[in-house]
Length: 330
Image (tube, rainbow, N blue to C red; front, top):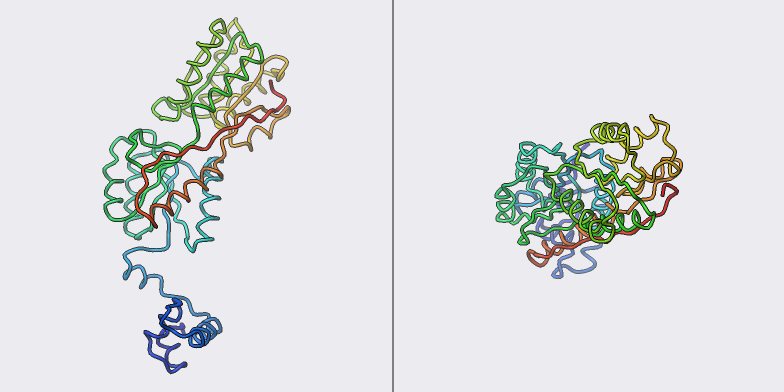
């Protein structure tokens, strides 16, 4: 089957190639009647612009690059869903790559994006990324970067994130309201800014408003580590009456241990988490959580990306607020 080209359209309509090209772009110099004829024939012959040729001419594609630590993470899954939805509405597609929290993978992903002349990059940093020079080079090449979730500390970058401190404070408030006396608070990788912010906010709030509550703070790197940590502390003589899980991944590990020990929730222990919302509703009773919406974050990130593309670089850090969703676990 012959590919429909601008040349073929021009020959059949007895117009110049430049006239056909401008008609397809709705150029104001082309009459309405001519545009209608060109579009009608293009549609009937399933004409599609040569994306590679456009890419060479404009030095850009209609593709956004997305880097996430793990595509399987439900928070990033919902973030990607929002980005994909908005991209489609605006004539863009996505190239999604994961870093597996490895800085070398992250650098290779950025190289792939440059080679494919992406129009912009949505980037969630790996846990140990320190040097941001490669991202600055992307911006120097007129490829805007919007950081999300795990973001640089420097305010010179465009970034969107959850209101991490507020999430932790809401969780602490609910724990205090429950009248907790002994709390096990499990946080994520201590190298991540998100873990640092949530832990600091939680700890400061508890020390200020519940000084007599005994809190044990630990950091874990995976669901398996969270399970092992809960096992270890549960087997001590002094039992905790409340456990706080900083993420869905940690919650899964905690609940696996709770179920293995046949601990009754909330009779024996109260459980609260920070979550995207899906995992807490898989348990019975449902887990109370502070909602962090990856979908809302994705929508906000896309707004920032379009602002960068259309009006130049923005330097604002924007946050998505959190809300408490009451389950039956407290």
